[in-house]
Amino acid sequence: MVDHLYGQHHLECVWGEAGRMAGGDPHPPDPPDAPDPPDAPGAGADPHAVVAGDLPRLSLPYADGLITIARVRRTPDAPVCRVPPGDPAHGQRATLVDFVAADAAQAARTAVRLVRLSGLTAVAVHARYAPSDTAALAVCLAGRLHDARARRGLTGHVVVADHRPELPARGVGGVDAAGLVCVPHLLAVHHRAGEAARGPWGGPMGPAGVTDRVVWEIMSPDQHRAWLGGRPGPPVDVLEEHLGGLLTLAGLVRSGCAQVPSHAEVLGVLRGGPLTTEAVYRHPGLLLTVAAALGNREE
Image (cartoon, rainbow, N blue to C red; front, side):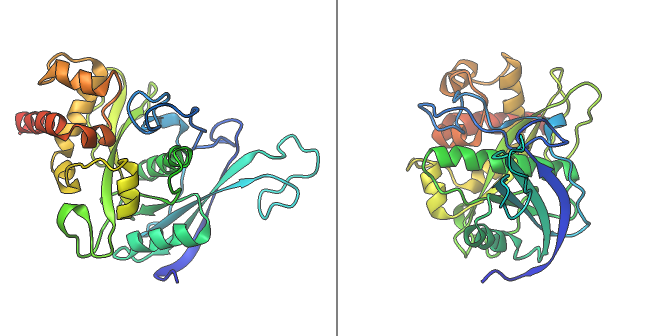
């Protein structure tokens, strides 16, 4: 049973496969399978790189809750987004986004239960104080992660958050009493001329018009192990402690700055790709040491 849900607020956000904004899908299909995991560095188009102008426009109430994300195929007998027989949009995918108010203290666990029981594509936990562009970023990443995990044969039960989610009775290693793991994902948001950059963990705009941001994902321990492919990694607490340095490192790597500590070694382990959380899990000794040095340098 899914409890702690108070009521639904329809966002009137519907995207299809053709076009952006007025019918564009915020979760474009990812490229075909690659030797590395699709959400790892160097595996084709990076799901952690987002164009700010392509994000969905959300109008959210000032309330804590859950943003539900569901995909449907447009057919004459579809439950929503029906099309008449022979319509050019027949068979296209539409993404429906709704909002359900929920208790902030229970939102993470409620979202995990909801996405498992309802058949939704993903759920994003929203805090009433989170900016709408941060919520849109979480919605975008959720769909991309769902697609990437599905191609690896992993569970598609994706839950993200547009803020550091509240996990009651949080214990060692970022795992709470209910067995949930909170993982920060690093995203590069590319801005066109005239677009502003703001939000939690958003660094200053660089010459290339890119801001590094964080979206959190909430996983079960089994999902976490499967995502890592059985590899051990540092406790999530350690990643959180060095987020400032990791965001700085992500920007320096992308800009090709030679002032990165252990520059050659960092570029070598990233193999020409961007800095991602999964890369940090695979090479924690080097990347967290560099992140710590950059964080100390900023203090």
